[in-house]
Length: 214
Image 1 (tube, one colour):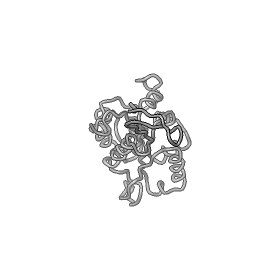
Image 2 (cartoon, helix red, strand yellow; image 1 turned 90 degrees about the vertical axis):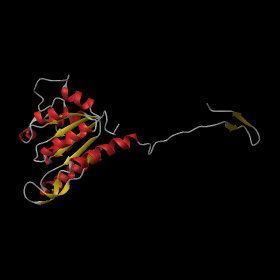
Image 3 (tube, one colour; image 1 turned 45 degrees about the vertical axis):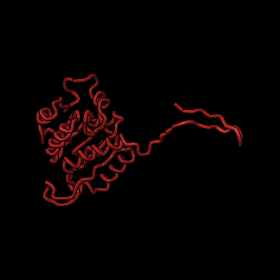
Image 4 (cartoon, one colour; image 1 turned 120 degrees about the horizontal axis):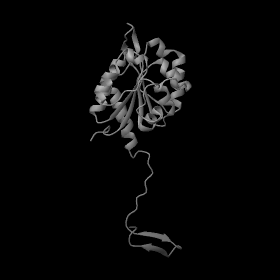
């Protein structure tokens, strides 16, 4: 059984050209044994169809707050269902709304309602990524506990070269696996180990003891 087996992951997909990579990402997460629940923004559906994700994940795909609900108070149900919320790609617009606490669609509302870890994989034009406003929004999110998977450097869809590419799906899956592995790790835990008999001093000469601590 792998690290992701049985894990419940809400995958948020926002409206960037890198949304096509989220299809492979969802597939890799599913093959690793995770239960993947996709939430798409309206803009994301202009790049990839909900049917694609539904076929890959074998689960309903949520695209709006106003459709026929599949759960009672759906955004709350998704927020409580998730063990982690992963947004890939995370556009500058989404990052700005998440940093400001804006909840105007299903994805931002779910993010605001959830108490589980939030992982963001930004993808955008280099100028947008390096803009001080975006960097300030990223800083605010990380200070609140969000984990940022840094964008890769390379040629972008706009024809320029620089930071802003969505990391490859395999890299994002590795980051998710690392998150769950750390959660299972004993690093930083305080553990008391007892064995054999114990002795409790009464004075410099005498003590109380037993043969075994049980």
